[in-house]
Image (tube, rainbow, N blue to C red; front, side):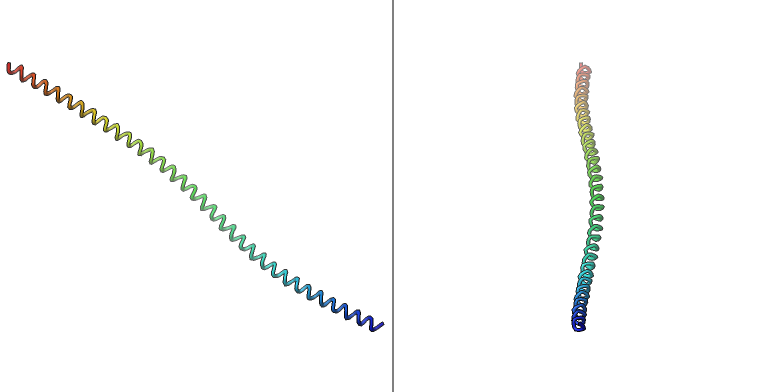
Amino acid sequence: ATHALSARETALKATVQELEASVREHRSANDTLQAQLQTLTQAQTAEKSELERMLQQHERLTKAHSTLQDSYKSNEEKLEQEIRSRNEIQRVEQRLKEELEEKRAQLEEVVTRDAQLQAT
């Protein structure tokens, strides 16, 4: 009976040693997984920060683009108004030149008639 108990004790000790080895392996694997999880979490946090930065930059660029579009439209309208004003000035100048030429011709006619009347 003592031999049987000794064999049983030896078997139990071997089982305990196997379980302790298994626990150590699982702890090691768990530590490895924890380290990997921490690395992935840090990478995810860094990526999230980068995405937030990129989103903010996109929003700033979108706002700047909108401002530039508004400025371009305003400048385009000012330019079109300036062109209309210059065209109107050119039309008025042309009309005034034509009226001046007409008045000169009338004046020459009057001067010529006056000279003819004076001669007679």
